[in-house]
Image (cartoon, rainbow, N blue to C red; front, side, top):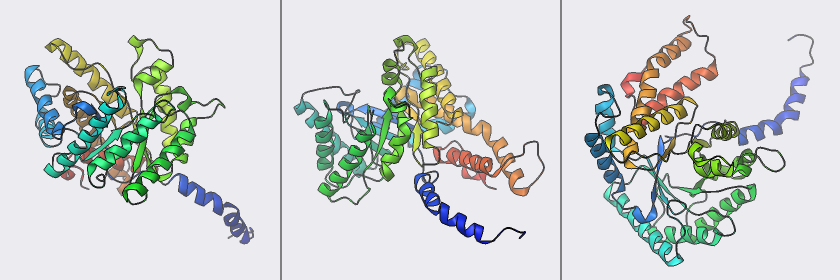
Length: 386
């Protein structure tokens, strides 16, 4: 060492030890485990135990009835196999906007039937690998219904919810609502004898105050750190957010500049926290005659690809016929980029000279990209070994 007093390092460690611990707590890095490529929303009164195989069959039937398929021959076997094997990766039983406001007796019955359906799907081995429930918001008008729905659903399951179970909380506008949701999850765990931390939730970012608060701060960042370990994701709500921003109905879309701004704020707020992101949905569904189906497929495929290119690896699907384009666009994204990613990663690891000077952070991103490709079925393990 040169002339610097060696005890300076001791002083720096003392001054920064609390900062080190706080940064490690708030920014633990990427969450382990697989992230689904989509979340499928099914209104509670349309949910059945066999929803996943039923959606897969409907998707394949649409492909057969409205040629050409929304994928080339190089992807046909891979996509059709996915639709037969695992058509839905993540499912939400919807008791909010997709279900609507109904008499309490009707929603009670729907919740109980959904709980029985989940139990049957798990017993029969046809449940999606990840699933959950979207309740109503914790705003004053719907708070009692949200709490009652969650209580009845857990009661009707007849046992603990499966691993990967997530509650979706919509229309969040204030940090206190996030804190209240974390409190509610704790109380439900106590009531049903569940381990602490078993119930997790995600937030729908679909109100302007969730993005930019009255005091001028990015509220969504405060959400992330107020929820603790229970928060697993932020989902962008395309249409509620767009409407609240005064955007005309014809222009409300995932690729509107207002949507891009909100999602960019979400992306920065969650970076390094382990909270995952999901884009929203398109309400242009592949239904009707072949021309209409083909046009909707083209739009959906373009929007899925656009989201992937912007670092949103998950989105919403609302109709079985969106599944072919979800997987086709996702698989194409990973398969087209895999050769270059592998070459760059091998060059980095071997310190071989190449035309791109990658750094450690980019190498980790390349590894993550390939891992995601394998997890969703776009790539085989053998294709990325080495």
